Length: 251
Image 1 (tube, helix red, strand yellow):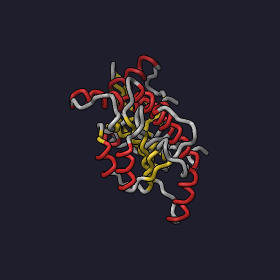
Image 2 (cartoon, one colour; image 1 turned 180 degrees about the vertical axis):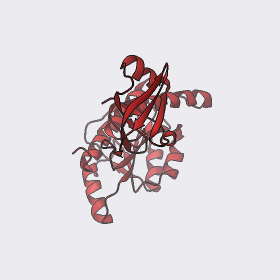
Image 3 (cartoon, rainbow, N blue to C red; image 1 turned 120 degrees about the vertical axis):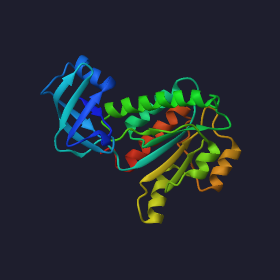
Image 4 (cartoon, rainbow, N blue to C red; image 1 turned 90 degrees about the horizontal axis):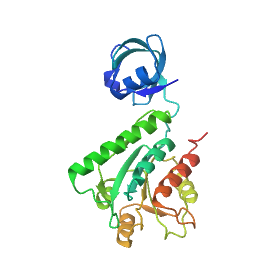
């Protein structure tokens, strides 16, 4: 069944109007009409079967059936702090990490970040594009939410503001602590499974030593992803997939 997101506050008495690109796709591409069924997600983790009851040129109204929790939404909330890579690599990172279940993505400006997003107007346009990519990926992968793409944040801001119960910095120079051992030991020590995890991935060239030291001083743990050196656009996906598997989100 074709699936579409609507804002939860637009649902009134089990009715909702769909406009814009989604309406055009439903009416002109899928060629659906009155009486046809679609699936609607409210972006807050609830899915509804929906029947089209009225249409116009670029607009339709649907009647929602009984809803239930989105089966595609993981219980583990992972925030990815991604060092902004060059060219269009961030588009790819966002698309694939949303498919894998990321909860939030924070584009990260680091000492070795090459892409300049200091211009507010330029940054806003880029974030709007990234949010659209996240929305399309969430729709395709049957997520229950559309993960938020934040405005770019400095490394210092990210380190100081993060409040996750597990704060992980993946670093190529870490030699001792791997992800499985870290999560095993954390669960054992805290006697409770952590469901809110923050992970940092550096840009091309990695993080510098001062950034790593600052993170460590503020409660972030450095973890290795193994002996192979991964590209920045690969590392986040690999880490996220490993965490989701460990947490039982791929059953």
